[in-house]
Length: 129
Image 1: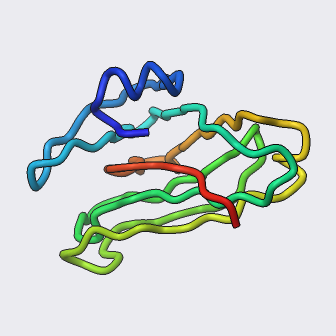
Image 2: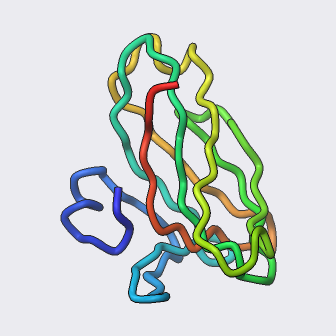
């Protein structure tokens, strides 16, 4: 899914609260502000171990701690503040196999911790493990 691209967001059933698009280095990214959240659906291969890949910019500061949930199961807590400053980075999150065994579609929710934001998120995708 490409945040900031209306067709991509529609194709992946993007939803959110207190979200906005950020333009940065000639690219678009999605942010969920304090008290907000964002969600979207991505395809999964039934029974196949999968990985969620999220692209961030490593140089943002401030409160950027959030949880990542897949079908209501938390798979990670992330803090991207100051993570590899000055670079776009891809972070891989393993999706537990039991979440793909019966599903061809996964719903991802990014929820900030109190006082924090989510992102900016530049790109998300699932790949086979």
